[in-house]
Image (cartoon, rainbow, N blue to C red; front, side, top):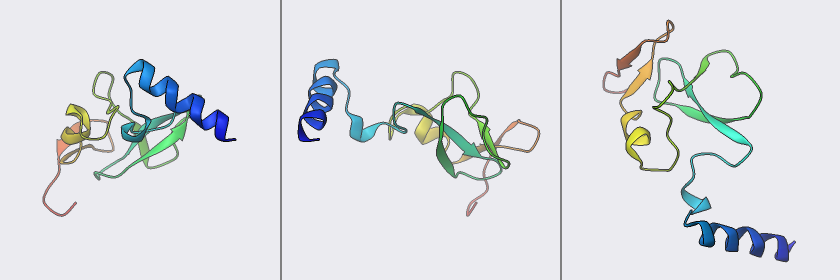
Length: 90
């Protein structure tokens, strides 16, 4: 197990990526809670559960604190898929 983890860490260093700051793991993609700033990670190849949606193409957060991660802190999708600005406290 230790060798497997070391290999993963070495691969992350060699590619210049940090696995710690990735929004989701390699076999998952981020989904957005409709009407809220909440999000989750969901298995690739599966549709989001009820109440969640895929992020709009080109606006998907990839790393904690990146442009789109920050943007979605105060924006969301409404039930029709339109991007809306959140009111304070949502």
